[in-house]
Each structure stands twice: as structure tokens, then as C-alpha cells.
Length: 60
Image 1 (cartoon, rainbow, N blue to C red):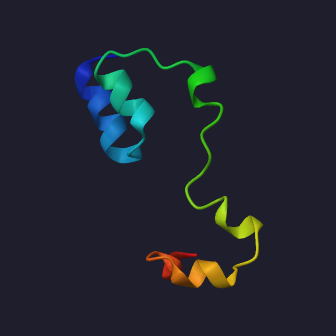
Image 2 (image 1 turned 30 degrees about the vertical axis):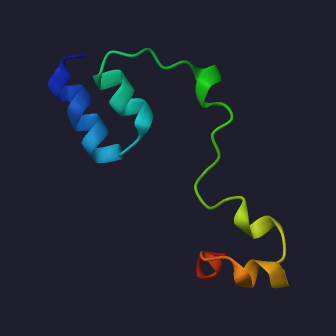
């Protein structure tokens, strides 16, 4: 793929993997296997009292 197409892919997806491809860095599936979707871990546990004291408690 040419550099313009790789840049286009990155600007539309916003994915780090697409940026690394644009920069010429090989991205393997193993490196991305443990990536979790943003925010997917927060809904798995109930909010506790100590969470209210955190500076980012509004996000939980």
C-alpha cells in the first residue's frame, strides 16, 4: 500500500495499529490480542464508596 492510503486509513480509523503501519512498523496479531476496548472493563464490577473519592469518579 502507498503511504497516502495508509495515512487515509489511520485518519479515518484513529487506530494505533494503522498509524504504526503508516510508519512502517509491522503489527502482529499477538501484539493486539490483549487489547481491550476502551471502557469495557468498567461495567464488570459495582461502584464502591472508595470509587467516589477518585478524581475520575464521574467517569465510572
